Image (tube, rainbow, N blue to C red):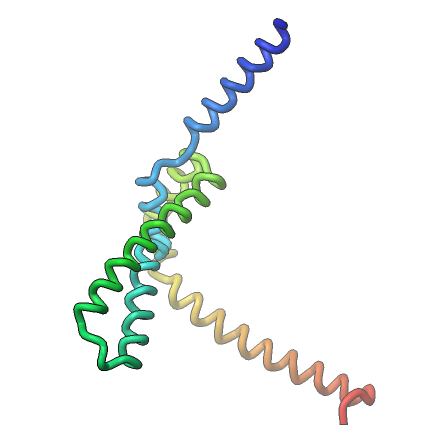
Length: 147
């Protein structure tokens, strides 16, 4: 019986420890503001509605406004699901360190160059992929698998 009580006490302590380390919503939101994820659902839903609206010019504006309010409820659900992912994967200490990095001078430099880095990498990856596709095609042709 003592063993079961001890086991329960250890389990209860470990659960409290894990809960204490779970990052706060504010930490996660700060991080996603730095990394560009914050507000993405709202932007996506607004863009989606704008595209759909062009295909239905006869639908009144108040209908679209009501629909936008409904979609807003769904984005709240999406935010909660996103927060849960971060809470599952990171601790408060992890989030504090990541946020501290993005608050730092080098973190700010990283953020300011991220778009440029991504664009350059995308361009390089496209060129590389096209060259590899051509190389594979040449090899297939050389080995008699293509006419």
